[in-house]
Length: 487
Image 1 (cartoon, rainbow, N blue to C red):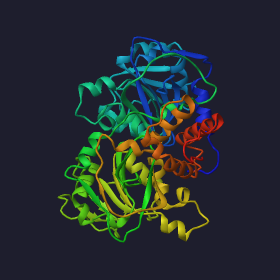
Image 2: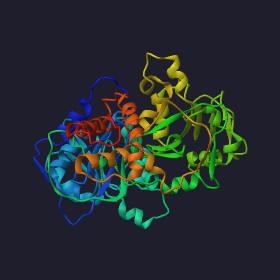
Image 3: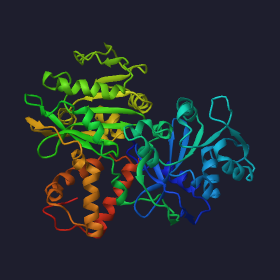
Image 4: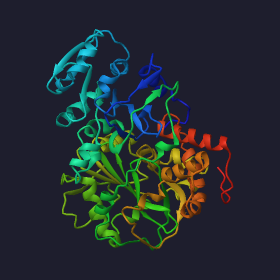
């Protein structure tokens, strides 16, 4: 992540997407969903008064993606769709060829009036020869692999849809990975959620919209934790190993194991279409006391592929997995890659591997590195964080106490998420909402986490600049007298 304020990509893209628009009337009988944004490239274009994202944009590889949170919005605002198509095509409207799914004939008709070369098609294939493809979110799953390759190579994709209805019809399916639209937009860090949102008549902001309310997306990861913690009642991390604390800051990241004070040493996250597990000391990978957990974790990362699990040479192969395991350096054909946080791997290659569906188990602490590199910034310069920051996890230099800690209740674990606690604190400062006793007890930890998060200096990441903006708003209002809280 860059340490210079180079947010021009997001700002320039936003200006192109809302060009000529003063307001956007999305009031209709259609119920959109909230779009959840992850990673550094995704940013909101339209946000309602509840902080729900109704339109978002991102890039992946050399291509671009725009998502609307209901397919009805593809016809409700033709000017917005036209702007989106032009941006997706690289910024020029001349000679722009569009493929539009046959279910969206009204959209094709609107675009044809603007002198685009528009073809109605039954579905996407790499041989279409178009610059931009337009579809609803329900028809892209079958060609997800081709569409991701199309985007990666420089194509543009516009998708409209909502996921709350699908989630209600498929209660036992994984929304993040299995909903058709997420199989495409997820690689770019835009996810359809099952959370209802509200269409309003919204003024178009001159700058990318932001709101403290958007910090809380109501994702619980209860099913993931139930799977990961099956047969697990406690985590025994007694011994000589000095574990670092993990910072959990991404919208799709969640704690798995934490001390009684809420300091996480084990965490998971989704990134693109893949999954990640972080443990903050490499010696715990393969620990007999955690054998049952590692069995669950590898299978969660593998996503049922029964593929090859690759272990870096310095990492012991986990016994009794019942899966094909081998010692290897990083390869794209692996199902899961197991490594330490000290490996000087190419961060972008590993991020692309996970984004397109791979699993990553990474272990390591940052306290020793911080002692050895006193002039450097662990959040920016530590090799593990170069991989993990964009995924919503980071390894801190703080050492946590060893012991035996109770496994969390799956529905309660996200209390210790940095953004969840910041959301509650922002609501207290900006709108006078009550803090619970538990909230107040963790404000000192929030202060420390804010300092670490800001030290990323990731000005090219929307998620970073959004939190920076919210913290600035809190300081402008004036800090309340809650304990000894200082930001």
